[in-house]
Length: 418
Image (cartoon, rainbow, N blue to C red; front, side, top):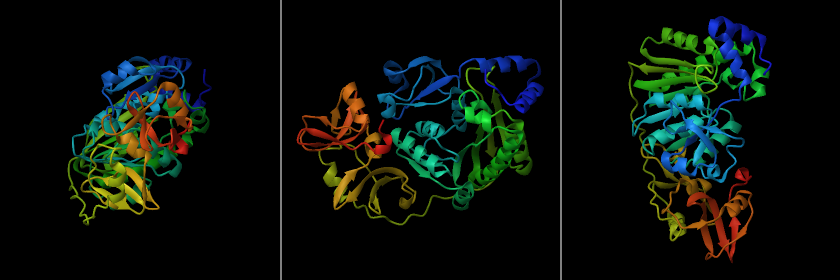
């Protein structure tokens, strides 16, 4: 069994009383694993039929979530195609509490690596605007990659401090998720570093940081908006007491729900979630946008015979070409990057391929062996006319290739190759 910190065990024993032994015995069991079907690309029922991993029942909290068995759940062709996300089962409990409606403005304030952002995007179904933010640049790049892999068309992925965002988005968002950085007690079975780095001092430091993040979230939430706060830890200072302190400072909030999922009470590694509503305050108006002249000449020349989907609000930002969201500044690049203009020629972006659905493009279908070859960054033979093609497996996009004299040149970004 894991060698757990003594101070942690003493605290949990005091909190749980008679339940402590049941809680402790759970550390002798393997960690629960889960996957979530991407309903931006296929139905949950279709995912069940083609799932490349062993499913072991559905989760209670998320209608598209499943328990799963096996190793390397994310090392499949369908994962590369963005058909599912590997996510700890109890971590799926927070996003449904946002109760997202079509057309809303939603913020995931501490978003990396993207599990909850992609989950939010599924509920939005392309309507409204999702801002997914991560302050750490390395984690931001992972977040951006997962947003692209899922084919999300209405997201702005940002790398800012909560304070910087709050200065810009006053009273803007209808819904905000704060999946706060925490001491990670629910990660002890999955990550040795979580055990090694844990201390009572670390818990206090996390609680102080969380309080500051909540203040920024408060400034960005519109009147009548909903704030969901979650952690993967059990420490009261980071959970119940954090919410109690926030409510004492902000009487305009109403606590709608608070739940603590403990691993000896359900299938999962544990999560905390609180749902708050802001009962007073204004809602910011839409951004006042400058008229941006669409410049889609190079894209339209490329698109002919390759893509059949329609893209609105196509604009250039520098050398990049984007299909941007309504009522949102074009320079924020909120939407889908569809390519870049290089030396007067259009080169399609990986995000464009991943945002397309069957019947929206001219695809190059490959078998499982060739799909793996493509994901390794290799070329392969093809019988296509020269030009750009979307490489597909079972009609689901994997990325771009360029057919040149019977050979498919690989254009999968190097960072995504296996």
